[in-house]
Every structure is written in structure tokens, then in C-alpha cells.
Length: 76
Image (tube, rainbow, N blue to C red; front, side):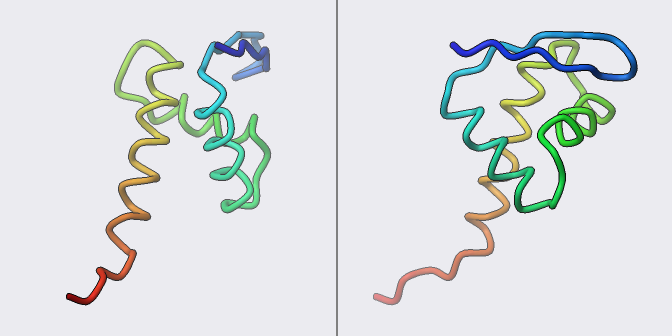
């Protein structure tokens, strides 16, 4: 687990995630043209769970699902 601190809505918080999730969040932020903090603030504002770390993991899962749905399927 990697723990990172950031400011969200004017207060400091820490998020602990596995390195693979941090890497995916960085890719998501780059693709959206925003900072990691801005991405996590957006996840925080739209989350359906009380735990921000869980919300980040779910956001990564949703992002990968959306990418998988847009990938062309292989021909048989």
C-alpha cells in the first residue's frame, strides 16, 4: 500500500492504495488533462461510498470497463 496526502475541499486527507491503482489514477488524470488532485476531488464529489479509497478503486474499475467496452473484439 502506498499512502499519499492531498487537499480536498480545503482539508488535508490521506489515501492508501495499492501501487497499481495509483498508476491507473495517473493514467486517468493524464487522459482527462487534469492533475491527480483534481481527478480525486472529482471522484470525491461523485462517490457513492463513504470510503474515498474504495471510491478511487471503483473509479479505476469503471474506467477500465469503459475502455474494454470500446475495444474492438478479435475476429474468429
